[in-house]
Length: 193
Image 1 (cartoon, one colour):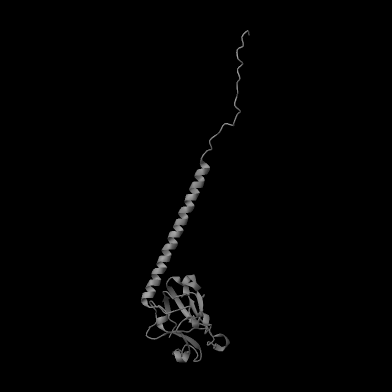
Image 2 (spheres, rainbow, N blue to C red; image 1 turned 90 degrees about the vertical axis):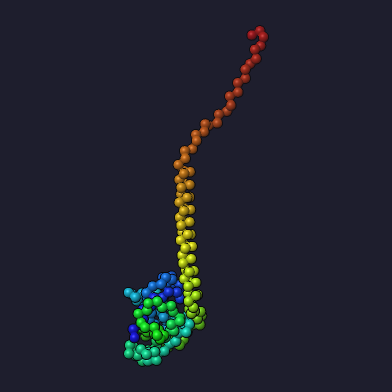
């Protein structure tokens, strides 16, 4: 069974790890035995690597237990994830059973994948359809707020540029330099002169 190619919609917390994953996109999921690696379908440059325990309900099994021993050695660790943990749209593989993420990588240290970091447990949480729809609506609302903020900022900058250039273009009124007042004292007409 090949690694299914998924279209990830929204997984709680994933956008905080990698901005590129906020919008739905085609990805390929694989594992190195310790992390879930999510890559674009055309290149295997990881978008994000997440500890396996970050996915609530994930389970590490041997390839034989997961039913993929024909692709890997029977003792190769693979990650099995229940479908309720990931929103899957248009997956190329049949979705009757859980998804099996397995790949060409081997776990470091002989595949000891039981060591986990508890602090990552809350990274991914299953959501029902109502919550997923609300989260998508929130993303759209956030996008609109960003767009309005950017447009407002551009309008403000243009207004300030206009105001500055208008002030600089106005000619200054010429003012006559101050002259002391001329005081004329007329001598009175004296009789006999």
